[in-house]
Length: 190
Image (cartoon, rainbow, N blue to C red; front, top):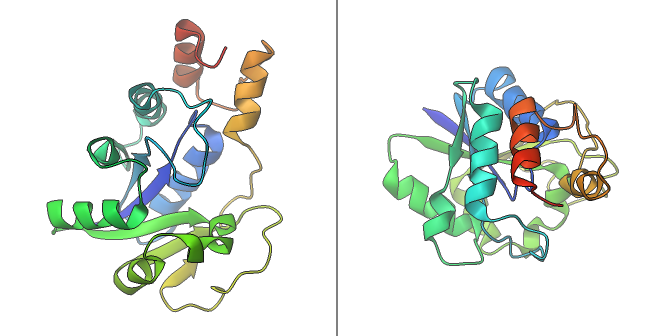
């Protein structure tokens, strides 16, 4: 089975993430998309990061009705910060029956050369890239291991959603109803 790995903090997961994942699962040769919840991204500060298990629960709630989507806590047991190459290696060893494809936004290609062992990622894994607004030029436009996927161009950020929550403003339509209900119940991000 071909599994697309969608890495992220998902702090919180929102409809932009879901639309990208569903597009990958329905419009490409990917069979399933796994949301890999990252406890700590080496490129981001975690000052407003909700606990990893709470973020995993939000992802599980958001995707509960879509059999093509799955949440993964694989990075919870790995050293922090999480490096994509290490997670890809662990997953490949644990699930040799699957072919793994990395899903990323085009904005990440700009800094991809800064990733740990990015050459090894390109050597052993394919990367499916979705468009992101205002992405500057990068060196990977014609790389044979990188495939650009037509997907809706949505400029929704978790930062924006967290800010709205802190301001006691509406987040309806930015996240799914089950995600919003849990955020409100647990007073996440307030």
